[in-house]
Image (cartoon, rainbow, N blue to C red):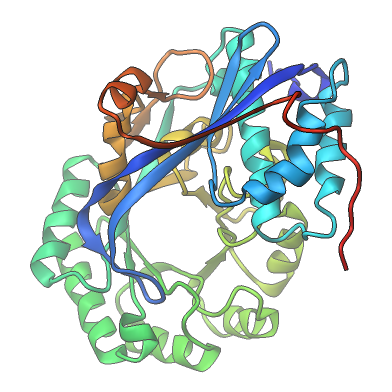
Length: 391
């Protein structure tokens, strides 16, 4: 039975952000529009209630201005208020910052941390707190940086095949989308390594226009591509609709969105694979709204981001829904955790611990001096919320 976080009361007395020292990527990694990534970091927001219970979530540590001006004045001065009411105040406090950008993502990260806190208070794993009946979730392998050599592609694919995964997604759009011939050859090579029993998807990271995407799909029409991800800019709905109508290959979008309210528009445009990120959309309930839209429409559903956290929510979706695991980055980040989901039967098996399925090894990171920044707030350092609009 699902517990309802929104009927609970959170008397938050302390908020802290710890920024951990970046760890090297498994392989230096580049996609169509960003990179190369040589290292990747983790910042964690920690919310503590009056009884010492804590909730944690990965957080965008660069957005402390929105945190201090909008969210903390409400979080630290709303004692005795049901979370349904508090969430509404948090939500509308960012109206002028916009619901589709960084402020919306930060709202979702706070909401995720509060769900973790509620699950820990109930002494339940977060996925059980949310009503999941299973402890396992399928995973698809992700990587294939546009900078990878063929040998690096082969090695990464071998890693995923050894884990029993049945789907691999690679990056295309090499050289900011200008090297289509090499994209095609790399995809042909990957398909030859995967063989017919493993699905292949490609991720363009928004760099192309509709004509370029169609040209690629024409040149790879015999390679059984399962989906093409963000082939054009995520705000170009006209081109999204044109592309979806022109190709039988499933088109996926969603990881760039911060609100569930945009997904019906994507569905109407013909998108057939939704990919909201739990810690980058405006809360657990908004993520579940997208899950429900996908389920009702009979389309594919997956989520990425910080995969070890994401896994807890994905167990509440259908058994074929998958968590994205970007090995080059996430594999390096695993050293942060003393407890985490473990590989099992083509997916993750979640640990039986209260709250989120990971535990940052805080003792180690403190002893090693690898917490590079800590910021902390309480009610004495933050005044109560007063709407302030600067035009």
